[in-house]
Image 1 (tube, one colour):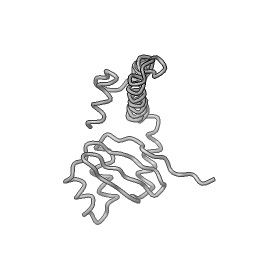
Image 2 (image 1 turned 135 degrees about the horizontal axis):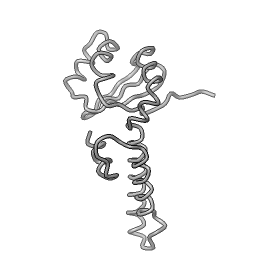
Image 3 (image 1 turned 180 degrees about the vertical axis):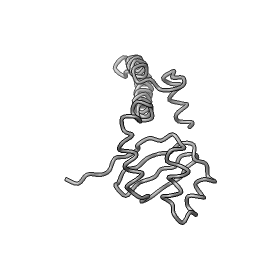
Image 4 (image 1 turned 90 degrees about the vertical axis):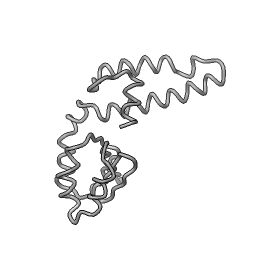
Length: 148
């Protein structure tokens, strides 16, 4: 949640994320912090770091925007219904679940108590369906690796 709030503050987003407004804010910040605008090497390095933060923040906020979630809802519903939990990790208030199809989702705001209940549950998939999947803000973190 800290990361979400940090990026929302950077892009001056309040409430739900509007992709059009976010894109305008992104373009403005990229213009302001583009490294080529600075002659001084120290300022150029700072601008490069800011640019990376802006790019990361933009992609992150796009991934949790309601429009993005809505367009990917069918895939998400299919993943949680058809595939089982392959692996999971918890750090701070972030739960990362990798499914047997290779796709990984991040769930924000999952506390340690709920994580421990997931670990101790004899039927983790059922527990996650009841308590996690549709109860927390989520985003697709990694796509399945495709073998060519």
